[in-house]
Image 1 (spheres, rainbow, N blue to C red):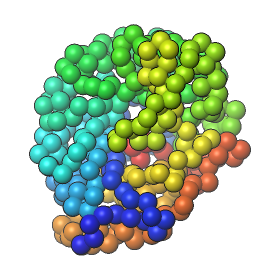
Image 2: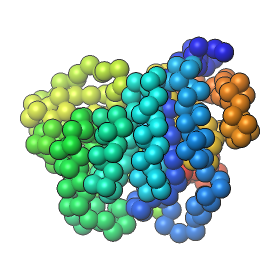
Image 3: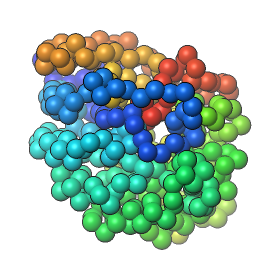
Amino acid sequence: MNNKLVDKFGRSYKYLRISVTDRCNFRCKYCMPQHNFKMLSHQDILSYEDIIFIVKTLTEVGIEKIRITGGEPLVRKNISYMFEQLGKIEKIKDLTLTTNGSLLKKYAKVIFDSGVRRINISLDSLKDDRYEYITGGFNLKHIIDSINYAKSIGFNPIKINVVAIKGFNDDEILDFCDFAAKNSFNVRFIEFMPLESSIEWKKENILTGKEIIDIISKQYEVKKIDKNKYSGPSEDYLLSNGAKIGIITPISNHFCNSCDKLRLTADGKLRPCLLSNYEVDLKPAIINSDKELLLKLINDSLNLKYEKHSVDCSENNSKNGKYGRNMFEIGG
């Protein structure tokens, strides 16, 4: 058995994002279709035992960071069990969660007790009416209260993920910087990506990382800080107000050369690149708990991975046909 996962360009893979469900209690405009979509049936999604088998196998070949995503992962029944089981796998060095925060009061304690210390929470506006609009009707105060509850339990750092959309929340960039400073949260601004659902993909909706930094620099001194081992693709900065922010630029400044992540969909497909429609079905290996076949399928998929994705600010990209799935089906 090979002792690590490496693609033909020499990139080593240590990070697995797992979508445990395509279901979500939110209906975010850029993520989930507003009409005519069908969720996976229960028999189509991986069982927790399937997921644990995959994780244990991949930790033997270098995977050491696991992120649980959805949809909204906390809507899946008995999710506590999976966190408890993953928390027992010694080779996992970093077990994390991305969530919309709506169910944190119910699950935060058991997740923390399972060994999760870092969580990412999606929060695209600090204005009540905008937040209600973008999420499909959810209450901002409830989410803020839930985030503060998670903080009180001991999660650190808490990262706030903001999809920056020109014409929607670009006037809140400085508000989020103040929010980060006052609450000791790390706010990460993410460029709007071409996997939208009800919001048509238009290049004028992109707020680039450079534009975000330019906005911030007019108000605060911006100092770049070194990445830590698990910081991922974010370029991180310390502001003169004490805020820690990150900029993630999948569109304007590809970070493909340093990519170290694989994505597992809820129905058992391995997706080596978020912005590519290429997937490999792992179910044949999972059904028979066949480690050798599982690793062969994964290694074969890595050998077919492109050096970089082709999406940039100049393209009028649509999800239809080219990317195949909506964001909620992939896990981001």
